[in-house]
Length: 423
Image 1 (cartoon, rainbow, N blue to C red):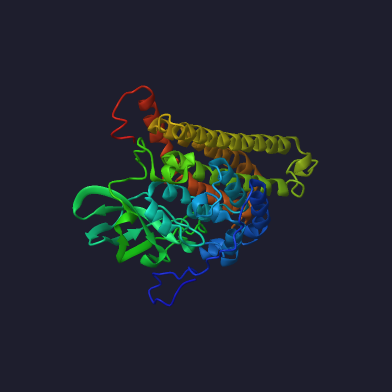
Image 2: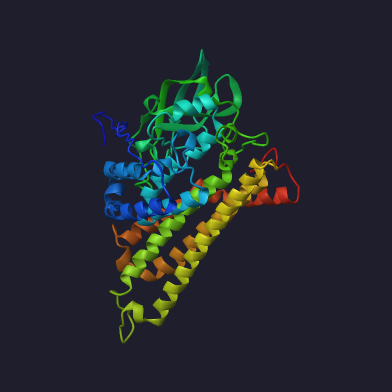
């Protein structure tokens, strides 16, 4: 939905579509059933989603009604407090139907966890006062925070705000114009920023709603700014406001492992979608060798499908283990043990990253390679999935697995300046 701006720089999104009809309670089975039911519409609309650059309002309302924006929301504010493992399972089903839609939904709904963990109680009570909360969260610092009475004036453009079309808030990092070199994390309500109509020109994930946001002399209260706090280098050794407020161990975690898990999960979901498409082709496509049987009857295609299936089962099991590590570390913290360490946080990220790599390997080495050129023409589902996965493969979070491995090893052997410079 592009507004009437003659330069086409801003985008009108349906910010008034809040819906308070979410279920009062929700089980994992119910959430998965909803995800699979909605998945058919997600698949049907994937091409339109890509053309629009974000999913439809109908889908958004479906996600709202299913309670997906409440999965990680604190029970204090009417949420369900799903575990990380449960959240990943539900989001994986949406990504399996369309990775870009899953990306937009995950990166808007998932940040309930960070806001409920890090912001003080009075800020949380304001932020979570609406029927639902959805906020992209970017890591690259941009723009400025200018201190004024009662808060800050925000200026600047923040790119790659995945999930912003249906957002209620935006969270990012900015520099202080009165404190050189200091970066702070802030959150801002929807009325304080403009969503730019600048997404859809990348190779893949064109439907992920990863538009830029623009702040122009926007005021936010002081308690919306975490001064000197960088999401990628948190110190939670003394606890978090969220752990004290909500009592759930997951609101006392640092963030690197979570971010790695949610993005690797989207890749695994996309790869499962590729496997579904490959399976649908098998009974109908013949081989190129005499006696030209259907692929389901061909030894080589049987082998390819079996190996790809095993790889993707392995990828899902690896994600399950990453989520289990996350839960183990945060529960220890909540029970009075040591806070999750940077080393452990990076381990969660690294294990999850391996799940993504396994999934990517299954697609590029087996499914895409052997599907045949007619299966990956422009506009085909497999072609779109491959482009989406390629875009994920070049994402900063994916690339960060390399320095994360180095940082983990430095911490393990207690060498280098890990504590001061984790990356």
